Image (cartoon, helix red, strand yellow):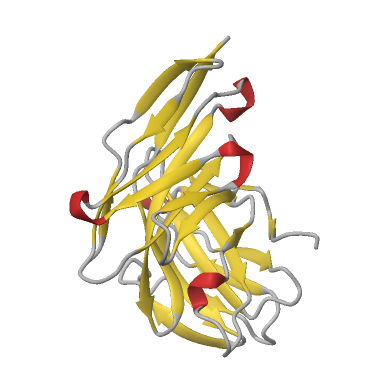
Length: 119
Length: 115
C-alpha cells in the first residue's frame, strides 16, 4: 500500500492559464474523490468517481473545472482560465467499497494534496 | 443540508494534560461521523469513525470520541496529550448520496501542545 499520490505538490500559475492535477489512488480502490481546501477552512467536496464513472459533482465545480478517471485508475482535475479564487489545496482521496458492505465502512484515504497558487 | 461546527479555532494544552475538542453537527438522519487529523503540508488521516452501535468510539493514537445524539455532538478526547499530537483536527459528517462518501467537514481546530 503506497498510499494516495498527488502530483504536483505545488503549482503556481498566472490568472487565465489552465492547470491539470493528477491523482493516483491506492491501487485496489474503486472510488476516488476530489476535495478543495482553502486557508482556514475544512475540505469541501467537489466530485467523486466509482471506477471510471463520475457519479456526483458539487455546485462548487464550475464549468471551468473538469475531472476524469478514464480507466478507473488515476484521475485528473483540470481547471481552465484560472482565477485567483481558485487558489487552494486540492485533495484527492480514495476508498474501496464492495456490494457486501456499507460505503461508510470504507474510510477515505487522502493524499497530501496539490497546493495551487494563482497570481 | 448537513453541517459541522467546531467552535474552537485554536486550543493550547500542556503535554500530558487531557484534551477535548468539540464538534456539533446538523444532519437530518442518522449521522455518520468522523474525526481526521492533518499535519502541516500533509493530507488528512482518519482518527476514528462512528456508524452505529456503541456511542463511545476508540481510534488510533489513543483518541476516543463519544456520540451524543441529544446534544448533536461528537467530541474528541485524549487523556494525555503528546507533543506529536500538535496538528489540525477536523470533524466531518457523512452523507449517503449515491452511495458515496460525501463528507462535510468543520472548519477545524488547531491544537498546540506546550512542552
